[in-house]
Image (cartoon, rainbow, N blue to C red):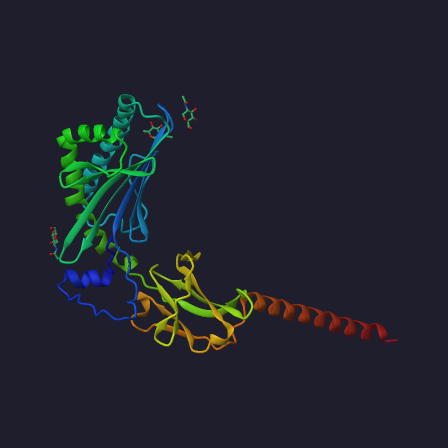
Length: 342
Ligand SMILES: *[C@@H]1O[C@H](CO)[C@@H](O)[C@H](O)[C@H]1NC(C)=O
Ligand SMILES: *[C@@H]1O[C@H](CO)[C@@H](O)[C@H](O)[C@H]1NC(C)=O
Ligand SMILES: *[C@@H]1O[C@H](CO)[C@@H](O)[C@H](O)[C@H]1NC(C)=O
């Protein structure tokens, strides 16, 4: 998948130049930008079923559609995009008809092809806007967690190692010209128009940039004579970030990256560690690249004085205990003095 940075994308749409130099130092990561819808359908048995829908734009989720509801819920003030009420009604109606016929069709397939309950079906569809105003859409389906079929051009095709009964399903689906035209319309007209519109109405939130803070600490020693250097990067948005332990201009090969974790304020946190011999820490630095920083990378040098967080907590506790004991001693002395007054 090709993710594009939004500002870059907009620059391209108005005819900018995207030639990027290929340096040995990695580029700042790009903001992911694609529209992705997911349908999750569970069939526990012949009588119990539900279908839920979700959609993302990059990291944000502007739409949800629960089984209990007949309408798509807008989760963002800009979810409507530039579609008119009439366009939304038409889309909503199409999807509602689709949802009930999908459920019916699955029941029929199950009966005809003797498939066993319970069933899990996931359908992913979406669109990416590429340079030069080109868009690329997709729709694929998974059965029991395995890719089984997709829509290509104007027909349904089977995934490479789909179970044999999928051929039967595809034969039936490909005979239905009306459905194929509707899917084609969704993929080639509706998704790109929806995304272009939402890009305009949600511009400020989609383009949000929050700069990271970074600090160093030492972790538990990995072994005798070795140090674990930890580079913490927190509070950044959007999610893509590049954090490296460097020796001069070279990235240290032993760099280990953790998972990017969410902070409570919808920004992100990442820690990147380096296991290094205690004698080899001179000249090491942690370098942070993020779209919010432009080309002003954060660079923190290891100077050997970074204590571990645990130690800081213990020191702070110790100070509190000392202050408390000191206060008690002071209070007792003062108190005794008054009592001592004859
Ligand atoms: C169907 O599945 C649901 C949910 O698991 C369950 O509560 C219900 O009893 C099942 N019904 C039958 C007829 O097996
Ligand atoms: C999901 O929606 C369908 C159609 O409205 C309904 O028949 C079904 O009972 C719902 N499923 C659950 C689990 O609520
Ligand atoms: C991009 O393509 C869409 C649909 O083909 C069209 O409506 C729109 O005006 C185009 N935008 C630009 C900037 O060319």
